[in-house]
Amino acid sequence: MHREIFFISDSTGITAETLGHSLITQFEKIEFETTTIPYIDTKEKAQQAVQQINKVYQQNQQKPLIFATLVNPKIHEIIATSQGMLIDFFRTFIDPLESELGLKSSFTIGKSHSMVDFEAYKNRIDAVNYTLAHDDGIRINNYGQADLVLVGVSRSGKTPTSLYLALQFGILTANYPFTEDDLQTQNLPAAIQPHKDKLFGLHIDAKRLQAIRNERLPQSQYASLRQCQREVNEIVALYQRENIPYLNSTHHSIEEISTKILAITGLERKTF
Image 1 (cartoon, rainbow, N blue to C red):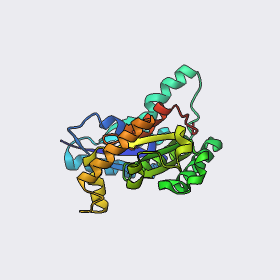
Image 2: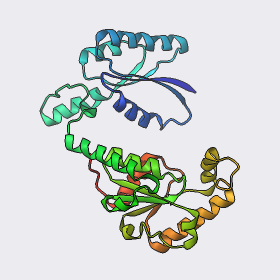
Image 3: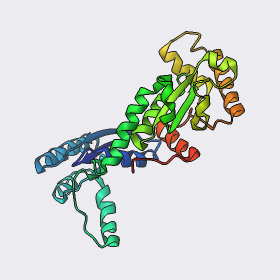
Image 4: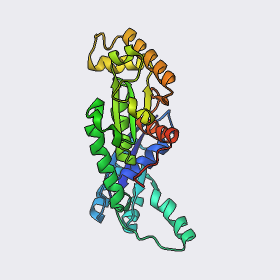
């Protein structure tokens, strides 16, 4: 099965995409093709979007799904005339909130992604800068400033997880890769030993690790299944021996890994 989706917003469209994707993941047997149309902030742009939606309907004879976040009621009315099935998240939730709170919404476009809280925004930027400067074992002398130090073998997902934690939650995250020499000693490297209470380990299945490494250095010893299996076994043994909390990242998204880390460590996000 195949279905067309439009994410439409009078701002960035990020909220419509996020909420819409959360819903369509529950329909695994359908192949969705998505189109995002942000900044629909004039009647002319809204009418052009309607024409685009109607064209898809005429081609497929199926109503495109429209996930929208539209603050302007006039823009909403125009989009509602299309031949698509419209789900406007603001209309779904704002009305009952107004009723419960006894107040009318301000109807301000772009509020959810604007710099409303400058302190939270600064925390995010500072965290990203710190994380970039302390990626992959760089500048280990500054680990004392870190909220968290991710450890693991090469290509186990440390860098993207570190950046997500920094950008989304304002967590000062460094990461340190265990080399073959580190694993052979069977002890924590001296550089991270003083920061043991900040360590969190990432673990990955050997076959998945092999596939990732093979994309980078195909047919190398580094990417061989035997090498990957040995490193995975040794790193898990080290985590257990040193009582380092760890998580298998193989079947989890970066978002899931990051939120699980916060739940396990008890770290508090600094961005909200």
